[in-house]
Image (cartoon, rainbow, N blue to C red; front, side, top):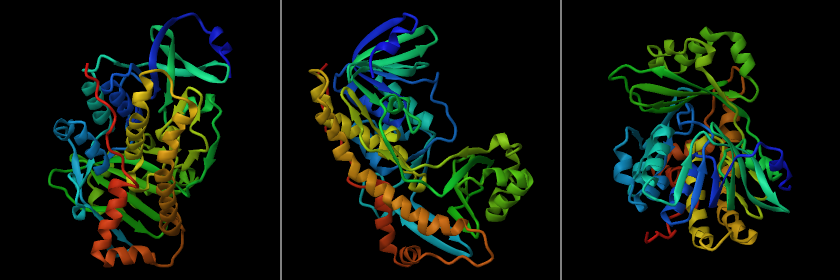
Length: 418
């Protein structure tokens, strides 16, 4: 943990800023926007040339929609192409179920908006261009941290124009579950584990083809489908480590399983032509024991990887960003906050993260693990699912947990007079 590694790099240009954010995902772009809005000199590093990544979290929940409203961005945001989901319906064997009903919520935006993540990120980037204090550097990949003793004072990055050293009072790792920042900072990760992985693919959709089912569960199989307007986004859930076995059965057998669970996909499944059209997402649940070093903070997936259960990952990352700006924007105007002040973010956000992950583990253990066990016995609905399905007002409680999460954040960070 010293500045020695940077001396071995070819000499390049150097940038000085108040805050360097590594990673242009939901946490990084939202935090960049909020700090730019507060007049804090900020550089966001995004390693790719654009935000176009398929199979990323595309669910924007009411908690995030409320944040966009508080920022005065909601009207423009909702003009972007998106679909809206209010009721989470499914089939468990032959039984139709409803596990959440967002229409019961007394919130400004009682729906989940399905929007490509690149549209969300591009919107934040375009909206932030009016802040002179915010700079987003695309094609800039952070490769290491710069240290002065035990304090992080910036990052080394590679760009098409050559190496760049970004010296910053505060470095924030927002670079996801495979975070180079947390690796280089040697931050310890607690692995919680997940019993499943997910195969993501798109199926074609004919005009007028509609179905409200969100999840389908059969013995040994589980399929999630999202209506994306002109195509179906599908998640075929498999037991952890079973991808090779699924592939060994062949693509035709895989497509037949999909059609057997969701006949509406029969016309669109030919879009899955090869295994290259099916992406394996390895599911993980983990969190850092410590989110900080002096001069460094990790948030979002870099601090806590979430299961896809509930589709809450994007929204927790946004909540982290809002909390970070609320707690640190003022302090950043006069230098780097102390590590104790940086740790206020963890103290604020760790409880919602722990509760959400605990609920994800309950769903994994009580529902998904049971469903994915092979066998000939008919599926039996777990008790909590039967109760929620039978008592409509409980569907509002489950909807609140999914839509708003635990202790949702609201924007209190300052707005620069400039």
